[in-house]
Length: 233
Length: 168
Image 1: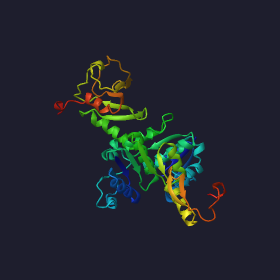
Image 2: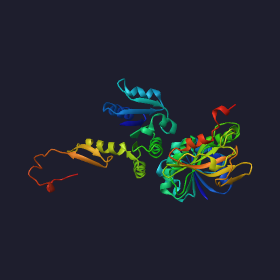
Image 3: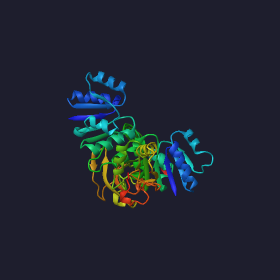
Image 4: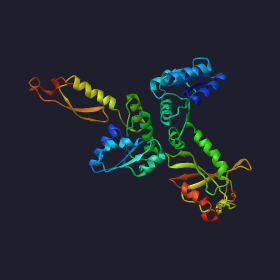
């Protein structure tokens, strides 16, 4: 595959080395001459092109039109966004974007509903791991937006069922669901499986509910699962 | 009307003062608190310190109820990102973004973001001034693509039909 990487920092450098070892063709666009030289030295061959990857002429010269994958991994979300916008315009390549502010994921998700941008946020990954460790013992249903669609009116969200939740051990049909929300799946660690629920499905503490919500019903849905304040230790 | 301006540089602050003087409610967002000095002492609007490409900062600035949004930071990439957040996440109806790079300005226009490219507009104005063109640009509209001109009828063109006069 031909992989075009914009951003030759630490992530870009080690990514390039790994990809070259897997025999992929790689070109790295890096703004600073010094960083580009360091990367060429690390790989022991010329893979870099010095220039601003958010500039259409630079991206074209780097071969965006024939790229199979374009990776935007600079440290600035706005630069990564423009790289994706330009790539979508000039190529059929799959886009992978690094996002530093997890909130910015939603705007990348909105760019191409047909061939979505793959968004990677290390902040979010660390946060998810922390949440999994911490929320098992917490009383608030952790809410996470997984995907936005329908021009941003609809979102796919994930909620945990915390200890002491009034929803625990209840069947779905016994819950009072807020308007504009529907539960589409339940992730369950113990069974290592995803349950497509029916009204009879019983919820357990630690379940992660995947739901589609419209126009900000997420917080109301979250309230259904939160443990009442009085029950908290 | 309620307007949100991201970037309190020369253009952002001047625009904020104009809109404020016209009686609108203006909120200005900038990362650098000292930038707000440009607004002067008579400015009655609000200021918010923070980056314009963060959902929470824009929410704090009242983006949900804004009638219009302007992105005029010194970074083209930041401006388009802020404009997309305003348009797609806050559903603000009027979103205007400044882009210095003409090809990118054109591309973003196709994404449905009103884009002003001062580079092109400025270059044309300077050329016309430099060449001492016999017409004055009266008004530039449709983001610099169309300009209306005015010229005085001189002895050379008086008495001629319009078709006979040499025009740019």
